Structure formats: structure tokens, C-alpha cells
Picture (tube, rainbow, N blue to C red):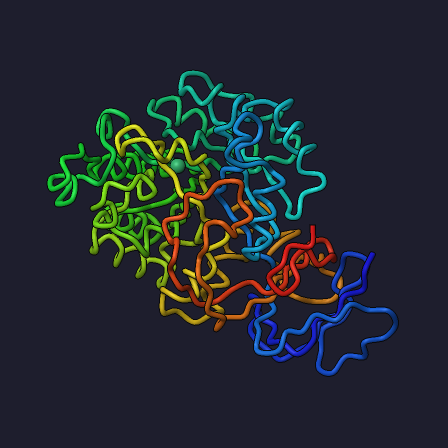
Length: 427
Ligand SMILES: [Zn+2]
């Protein structure tokens, strides 16, 4: 294994910031301090002007394997993740077949063995994500699964969700909800409001999300079980979570970069690249997501990286599948668009999601001797232009094509090995 010397950066982690070099050997951090001695045959990574942070942790990526390999694979998705600064990715279970039992969890873990980031499969809450029968959570938890969700769909049946929460609580795992009331959202493709009217596209009201957030807060209170809310997108949802947290309930929440950078107005040209679920909302919703990321109501930024092949995204707006790429652009949007201190933003991307994912023993921890060496070296001031043809993802459906972003992962170190050097994937 390599000895890697990260020289001249500012180390930023949960304990604070300090100028320090970092020496890594045999997969672990061995020394952190000023003017460390490089020693023997060591690969030196320049970190001048950069932040050296724990690797990023994505709570929400669709890696599409098994079954969706024309859109993404674990190999291409984790390469995109490494380029984005991620060393850990929670893989959503809406695959084909769904990750709803031990054998599929094992398949995903096996596919992830040579990947350039750690892959933590999320398990489905119900068999086949069909919302009818509880999945065998215990056998998946026994393989290390810590987060369960039917993402792509919300669990509609309140009684089943209550039972799932009681079961999850006993197992010490967390349920994550895609908050969408099927009946309220039915036939909608865009946020219900000014732009759905102007474009003549049926809308999804904010309330389709908010009624499920409200119900699950009530169920968290009833059962005492933790609930994580995926990709919150409306001011009303955020207000519900803010008061649930004030009450002391064990709720956490994430937001995706497109929900703090884009509104429904982006769909004015009927381009399905701007179709996503939950949909792009209003300026007021964007402002609410931003202030919730600032005040801690939203705990983490998650990508909801959702690759789709070009032919699917070339369909008419109402027929195209929802979803956008995220892994390679998320960090720059967080650093460049929120107006928050870099250390706060890195917390939203690393140590806070690591705790929600149940992987804090491995990822997101303080940069200190003895800790696993999963690191990213971030140049917070580097400008770059998003070129879909240069993304590592197998798909091209980024809504930021042609945009100049500020901030980029320069080097990524996973299990002590540099998997990205100067913005280039090493394998
Ligand atoms: Zn979802």
C-alpha cells in the first residue's frame, strides 16, 4: 500500500480547522502536524490553498445496479463519486430486482468490492418496494444495512409504516422516507403553481410531500423510532421538521443541491433534464431550504444522483423519467451557492451524513492518527465549467451543463490510496 503525504493544506473536520500536513500509510492516518518529515518513498499530494477534509458521504445515490446498467454501474457511479470528493455512497434500493433481501444486498456488496468509494446499500422497507408487505429487515441489518427506504415511492400505508418503525427501532436501524402521497401527486410532473399553469403540465402540490412529512413526524412521536426525511423540497416540510426537532423527536433531514439552486422556472423550455421528484419548486422554497441548511434544520446535503440514458431523457416532459445527476457537481454547488463557511458546508457533506448513515466509525471522523484514511482535498476557489461529455457517470443528465461552478475536489484518498489526483480519476 502507498504512503501518501498531503502537504500544505488546511485540515478541516468536526473539531475545527488548522494548518497541517497529513501522512497516510497502510490505509490509515499516521500523522497530522506542521512540517512533517516526508520520509521514504512517498507520494506527495500538494494541498496548497486547499482544505483537507474527511471524505464526503452521500446519503442518497442511485447507482442503478443491478438492472439499470445502461444508466450507471457501481463502477462508474463510484468513480463519479470519487471525482466529487465522496468516499462513501449509500446506494438506493430501487434497482431491478430491488435491494429487499439478504441475497441482493450480498450481490451489491460483491459488485462494490473494487469500487473507488465505499458502497453502503440501503434496504427496501417493503418487499419489492410495493408498499404491501414488510421486507426482511433483520436479515439485511445482519449484513450491515443501517438505512432502509422504499425511495422512489413513499410508504403509503400508515399502519404498515408504524409497524416498520417499531421493527426498525428494535433492530437499531433507521427508516428514510421519500415523502410523497401517491394520490395527491398522481399525474403530476412539475411543481403545482405558476409554471405548471403556464406550461400546461399537470402539477404536484407541495402538500403531496408535506402530508407525509406530517404523518411520519406523528409516527416518530408514537413509536419513538428515528425517521430520516429524504430530499425535502418545500418550505412547509421544513417548518414541520423544525418544530419536530424543537420538540426533541429523533428526526433528521436532507436536501439535494437542485432544491437550493433551481426553481420550476428552469422547465420553461420543456427540457426533461429539469424533471425531478420531488419537483423543482419556488423561490420561497429555495430560500427555505437554504436557511434550513444554515440553521441545522436540514442535517445534510445528499445528491439524489439519478442517472438516466439519453433516450429516456429525450422523451416529452410528461413521459421522461424524473432525476438528475449529482455526484460530480454537489460539492461545488454547496461551497459556491450557499454563502456558508466552508467548514459548515463540509459538515453537511461529511460528518453529519456519516452519522445518519450509521458509518461514522469509518467515514467523516476527525482527521487524527489511527483513523481510516478516507479524505478529500478540496480547492474551494477553483472555477470549472460543467461539461456533460467529461463526466465520469455513464449518463449525461446534468441540469448544470455549461455552468461555471466554484470549488472542486482536487484529490480523493480512499482506504489510503489516491483514487483522484489533480481532478483525474486514477482507476
Ligand atoms: Zn426519492
